[in-house]
Length: 207
Image (cartoon, rainbow, N blue to C red; front, side, top):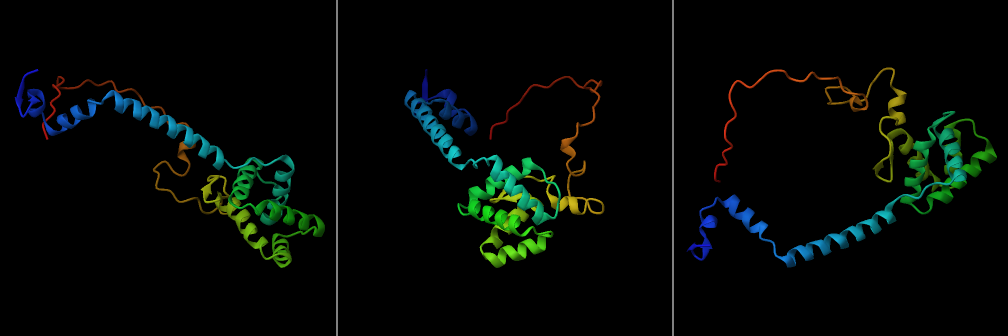
């Protein structure tokens, strides 16, 4: 190839800055490719290991049953979604190693005293152990706000929306309304028109 400007091919020093940068990026050496592939492999392995360490533990049937009974009493509800409960339990326990024992303590207290209201249960729990106040807050935050361990576990089915659904609907800036994406969008007819002008040549201007 003919060298005409400081040892560079004419195609390079006449090209636009963007084209020059692109040419430089495309001239990857075999060493760059091998090192890049090795880096991706190591990153993938490390990422998989980290992900495995951060996945919340799945609750067994007995743990989940106790958590659901405690949750039903604290929310004064006869029934709650068990799938949401399993996700909340997993994240609450993941966030703090003491939470499992504290949840068991709440269940033991509930079974022993047979509380009929959430307020009576919560008051007695804090009186028996002030540390139980925090786990009660986490349980209620999970069910009403849908958040556990700083993560959004559930949104649409969070109890905060259920309380006022007959009067106030969740705020939204979506033109389709809240949760519009959960429904199938309307069909749109295929355009039948034709362009008035013929296609133009693509022109890339130098920068």
